[in-house]
Length: 285
Image (cartoon, rainbow, N blue to C red; front, side, top):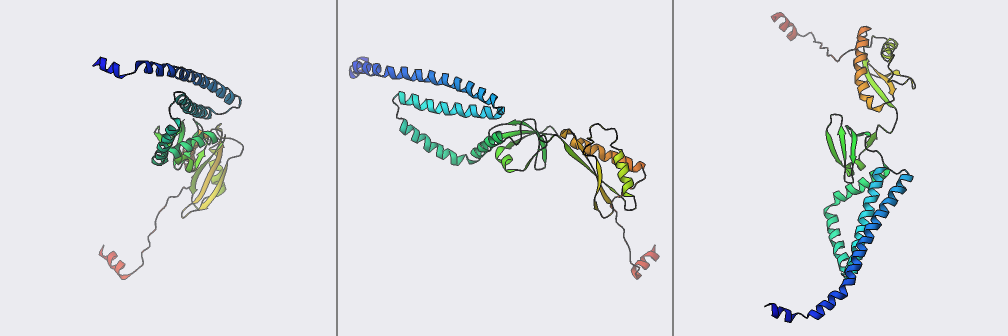
């Protein structure tokens, strides 16, 4: 069996073909080594250039990742050509597969593009306090496809970047100061200026509150049963915004109670018309 197989194969022709192909293999190995070294050089150059221009770490990581993938694709095609592989048909096949994949993964591609836009535009960065819709959270991690948020209740929320790119995002960390608003109502019979002085007195001695712009109490509306006031002041740390609002809501209530200033609550008055039926019911009692 082995003798028949040996006779059927032209060993001399086979060895000749292998000898002719060896330079291609050596050339391919050298190309792989060259692209490996080139990847190291590109990485150091990009990191150095990005550091000098003070580009964000997220943008640098993204650029390095794209450069790496582009170099891998270019290196693969170059090595394939060195090994006499039909690169044209390979590229055509990859293109058709990529087209089919793009239709099947439209949402993923949209999230990737949105992730690139977020990293480049930097509407927020890791550690920032943002509001997305009704949700307030800090940015834990920005990835290409998703962004991880941590809410004030320590809940981890993973949001697709496409949604963040389309939503109205409020970044509280970008501005150094934050305004705090505390709403309270007083009865119509009470003196507005007196109530204003009582409410402003609750702020005395609190170093967390900025003196400029000065705190104020304004009338925001006339309700069904109350004159609606609002205490407004500024704090330097935006992370204290809601804590101060809740704290001074309680302080305003206590201060108005001590000053005997009424804080009304909604109530309903019922008037009965004097009819025979009502008089009959009254007599029955």
